[in-house]
Structures are given as structure tokens and as C-alpha cells.
Amino acid sequence: MLLNRLVNGIASWSIEFIFIGEKNRDFQSKQSSQINFRLVANDYQLNKTLNEEFFEIFCVKDYRFSEKHEWIVLDKSDKTIGTVGISQYAQEALGDVVYVQLPEIDSDFDQDDEVGAIESVKAANEIYTPVSGKIIELNENLSEKPNLVNTSCYEEGWLFKIKLKNSEEYEKLMDQKTYDEFLKQSAA
Image (tube, rainbow, N blue to C red; front, side, top):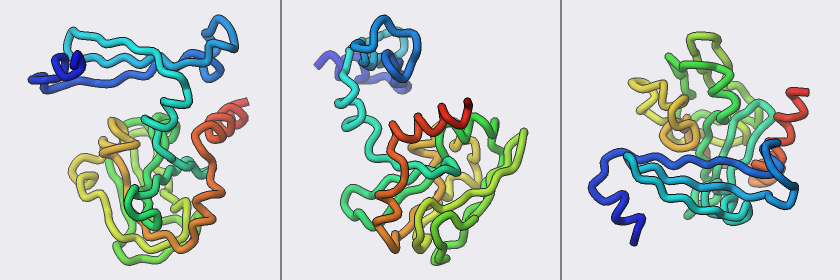
């Protein structure tokens, strides 16, 4: 009820997640592995503490990540269709995206094939498909708003949808926790 009153009639709001615990070294003890969830609606704040398991189930979905920093999440109603994008890490490394070249619909690709490119003010990087399959849909919004990759890389900034050939490839990709460890090891 409180959430409805806060958000009702407010055009813009955002959700911020502040990690406390093993993912963030600013914690008091290893037992305090929790996430502080804060909803900001204009000047109103609603604070709640959620345990990490709830966060992973409710908010993160089941994103899987490749070593090339692409993510994929399967459609809720059809587990043979995946939506693909680039990770938060990748979009931050790129900087402001100015152009996205996407693959053609009905194109078939093998896992880790180059399927397009993303250009930013800093660099140009290839896009790879994290699984084998056929491209079935493109995010047409990126032609006019390529910066959606920066502002909403896991939602509105997705790149394409693919019909999976082999679901085992998806299962072998890194989950969020493994990907976070991969990033830590890569930085070391």
C-alpha cells in the first residue's frame, strides 16, 4: 500500500541497489551479506533490507554471461528463445554508445560468432552471440536511441532475440555470481 501511494501519480522513479556484504568490501562482517533496496520516487524514499537469495530470484532473473561480456536471459513462456545484450561492465568500458550494428533477422550463428558491432565515443567493439541459434528479432529502438545500451543495458538496451539451437550452451554460461568472480579475476 505504501509503495502504491509513493509511486501513484509520479512520472519518474528509480530503483537503486546498494550491495552490502561479500560483493562490497565496505561491510562490517562476512555474516552481513545483505542488500539494501531503496526506492526513490521524487523526494520519497522507501528502504528495505532483502536477503541475497530473494534479490537473485526476484530482481536479477536468470541472466547468463559469456566471457565476452554478453548476457542472455530466456523467455519466461518459451525457454528456447533468449534475449541478448551486453553487460553493465561492457557498457561502462565502452562509454557513450553512438551506434549499434545488429545482425540480420533469420541469420544463423554458432556460439561466440561475431554478429555485429557497438561503436562508442571511446571505441568500437564486436558483438558476439553467447549461444548458437537463429536471430528472430532486433531491438529497433537502438537505431534511434543507441544510448539505451548505456542507460538500460539489461532492459530497454537489449540487442536481439535468438532461437536457441542447443540449450546446453546456455546452461554452461556463467551465472551472475560466477560472472562477478570472473570480473574480479580479470581485473587482478
